[in-house]
Length: 177
Image (cartoon, rainbow, N blue to C red):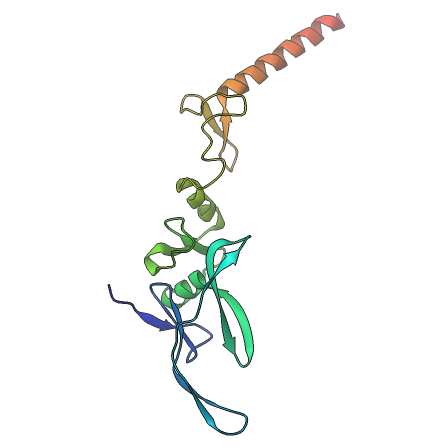
């Protein structure tokens, strides 16, 4: 599959991004302060991991008018090939791999869908749990989903809590008489 390049929005004539998630500078001539023209060759721009808070999300640094700015590569790809992010959306990786910045792996979607991608990919720390804290297995028969975030709860533990609460209330009502 051939690689397609587009200008980085806001950096037209300076940088391009490909549908494979690579970034390069554009060959150009720059007027120096002493009046001489400097020829800048096109070259690949290095990318780095996002650090401890952002995992494998790739970032790079772009310069314009002597000022540098760190940008996320996945955003550059979507902005160049799809357009700006619609209101209330963020960049999502379809396969859950934040280092895969191919255009076919990216989409604009809501924060909630982005979080669900982690669960669907089996990467969420709670989704990988097979048993509740009391040792009951999370099976379809023993699992209920509660609340807007669809949290998983153990039915056996819920039954035990309900029974204990009823016993406590029954004991409290008999001691009052």
